[in-house]
Image (tube, rainbow, N blue to C red; front, side, top):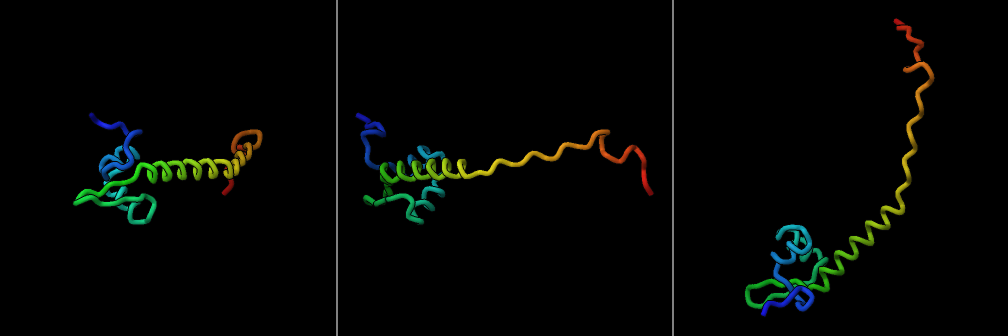
Length: 92
């Protein structure tokens, strides 16, 4: 019987990348910088589901905060009546 992700407490590096939407190299970088908790059993490196969830939830929260702090851009000024504003004359 295969366990669903909800039943598992750890996944392989490849599975973690698939779940997170990134590749194996990114998974290893996230392990190296402490963003993901991992451990080895034999030669297999496993990542805890709890740390994967924490990482994704932290990224979502960070994105929401960033979206709230964005200052709306001011619209560009409207052009003067008559087009480009030179009155149609070319000055040399």
